[in-house]
View 1 (cartoon, one colour):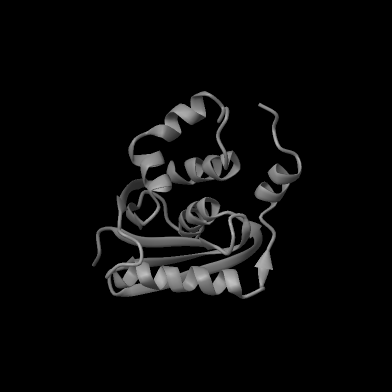
View 2: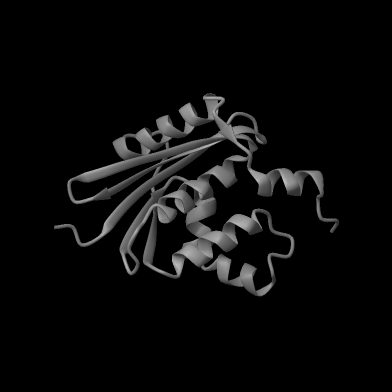
Length: 159
């Protein structure tokens, strides 16, 4: 039996901003679950992070040992270099995607998570599958509304 959950994630947007999507693989032992969803207007960084969030939201148990593989330096560095802790202390002053980072933070408290950066569009079949899922979702026109992005876009905070 597996002692840790392996997650691979990727995000995509057609234009930045533009239609976007995410893809995620959750692998526990010999079981694998695929997740994907498209959004009508979003950014690549938001979809990279949304892939992680969707994977964590799919879990039914807490206290899981998780290794998340992502080709997003933005996501991996924010967690592994502890930038998120500073952003939380400053209430995300001057930072984008605060809504998603707050959600990720709440979900992460229930687990032991480590991030691993993987090179995108390379020879990793799991990352490549996530890319296929993300781009297909972005192109599907079966989109949800990324309310956090569209609200921020229509009411930008003045610096």
